[in-house]
Amino acid sequence: MPISLADKPSLRGEKVLLRPVEVADVAAMLEPDPEGDRLTGTHHEFAVGARERWYATRADFDDRLDLAIVDRAAGNYVGEVVLNELDRDNRSCNFRIIVFYDRNRGRGLGTEATRLMLAHAFETVGLHRVELSVYLFNPRARRVYDKVGFVHEGTTRDALLWDGQWVDADTMSILDREWAAHRGLPQQGGRAR
Image (cartoon, rainbow, N blue to C red):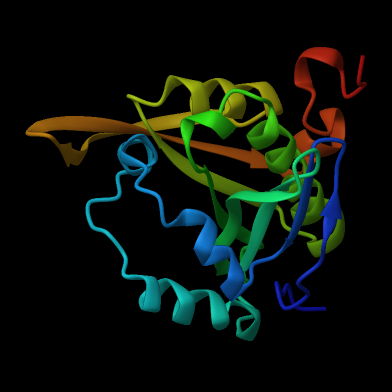
């Protein structure tokens, strides 16, 4: 059976609900987020209409999965987690995540969203490899990726020009056999404490 990201599931954790993105989610990201832009290397702003058109079409693609991160305690949209750049032949894809606004960061929402999405990628979709890039000025994200079992593969030098300074990016990946061994909890042997 060919690998596909056509199914747009909802995934439930203790802290977050991941569900397909909706046009209505755009309203939750209208406040400027300079730190989020910096951490993701986003140089330009997206007009509301462009964001709405983008979110309206995410369900139409079978080579990417865009899920909203909803804080279950507050019931509000706080970010998105994405599998994209699907390579069906090699059963691999790219991973990216953003938690918008400082008030939502540092609360474990991104860590749980990452684990939920990886569980789906490996256990349901059948991917072999998931990779990402993280800028060196984003140590919080790097800690999350290390914590859930991504492995550093190398560094792309001068990957981003930000505020007149060149910034390197680390490439990391996790393989299906690694996920099967620890399920996103490598320091605990795959068991939650």
